Image (cartoon, rainbow over all chains, first blue to last red):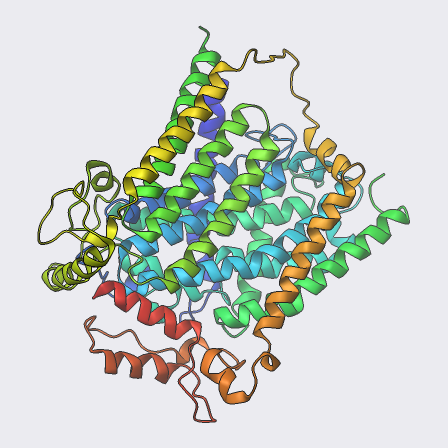
Length: 301
Length: 296
């Protein structure tokens, strides 16, 4: 009974996340630029299907990606008791499970077997290599201060002060790598127009719907995790917890989408360069700074 | 049997089937890409078994390593192999299990005959060199002999013996220690503390090894590793800034481009070598030609 309730809660969160992102994101982007996964159906060319798609992997792609998003929603807290499941290693679980989106893109892209969709596999994997290390470093700062991997404990540790005040570098790092993880501008290469919007150009009907659902929710997920790690999650005066959580999530989404769309697009090679030459050293420096702060007694006791 | 126990059994059976079927599929499918995905599925199934044994951290670590690592590994495998999608071999004679795990692979209808014919000749040559095996599946014409080797029977016998021996060892083991203690919810913290205290030398040593590996890769790829510039240009892409998105080649409407035209398309988008050396073999070019290879 309780299990069913929790499962329904996760499904409701998915619906809400996808719905809100779906209407929010196009409003924040202008028509002229690349929109990545938020490209509306009318702005795309016709769906191109290969004569010989892989009949197992092509449909497995969107299902895998959506499963990853669903699993990740399990650890997002909306209040002290409003979390589908508070795992002891929640943040680590989150990082792992969101990787299923990349696996889904690879399966779906390869399985569709058109020239453009196979490109999605190459580019999505390269993007994974680019973001995975700095993203982990961006998480580590918050985890070090909270001394826990549980999302609820991390929010509780920010009762006195949000981590964004103590670790502005880590927060900025999270914003950039989060955009990379969510395939939002300027990191839209797997969904760029010149490869017919990636998997969108090679899937139709229910598959396109599942892709849209998974990729819309992905931005929400990344922003929600950012709110948990750096903005104090559900904590805030006057308003109830879930409202604060949603407000922070959407504030973060607005910052990310607005800021990202004002930067020129980056190719995969540039992303790798940015990641290994800039973001990774910054992340390591952030870890050092946070360690020093903890030794100095700053942060939650 | 309570509901929880039944659920556990159910989960165990599902995960065990995924692990075994994944390993079987990895060895028998004709598609390299699918083979890698099957291997990943097998490992994820094993990770699920870890989680069932309350070793959450271990299971998640395994999933993390194998999704990211395996995707990158498959990427390199695909870039280097001749027929990563298995479409050339999809229509040849296969044993039942190979056919099952290769379901849904097929070459494009118009190219099928040509591929089969070409491959058939290759197979004949190799069969002639390797000696004819009377235990071959008896197929004629379309069968690709290069898939069967004379040592196949020996390999099968060896693997069955070894596998049987391992299972027998497990079954004949005198006693399985069981315990009723509940797993510690703080296991992640304890593993971290152990890694940073008791096993610190091993942990840091592994980190150092990986670092040296990275240094080695950079060293091998660095410009000075070749006697002169021309020698390097013949093997390695120059360290030019990658092409921005809008300079990439436009997707060609016709998938069946003749090879010369394909070369032109992929090179025109990439940066030309101003020294006039061989065309750069950067990732974009490789990727584009690879996907076209699969299509044709």
